[in-house]
Image (cartoon, rainbow over all chains, first blue to last red; front, side):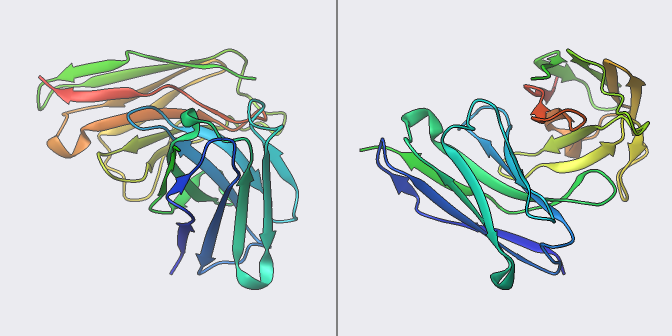
Length: 117
Length: 112
């Protein structure tokens, strides 16, 4: 069945780089787009960016200068890297699959990231 | 970037009554391919978001018919008839017509 699972460090120091992995199963990264969405504690959802089935990427305007999304199709993994982290980057980070019929149909459980010294 | 304005911020409803949430976009969400890429998601406490409505008015498989989406262009509405306890949470609209994609700020549905 379709699954997505985020993994990464729970704690990152300010000014450092965040590296997260979304490991997927039950579908191919060469057939579906995968997006990243984050949520600060007690706040709303923010679209961060996407990896398309063909390897193209798109990013949130406000994060574009410090965000990079990549993938390893042989390992069924999508990666998120964001540098120059600040405390307001604290939150839960989700990866989600975008179905061919125009919606996010499966989500990971999310991974909580705290930016603190 | 397209700004999605959701109102109200919070909504207090009695069980069995109707709830209505508005979502307005700063640009038309009608894509050149003829589709309107506006979705509604519900996030229950401690859970990942779940899809309710896609393409503005299509109910996702398994979603109760008490949920309905309507609207076009820049004005969209989610209606929940006969609110039940499992409907409580935060509702988000999301536009994926124009890059970068954007969410509304959310509407918290609470019990009166």
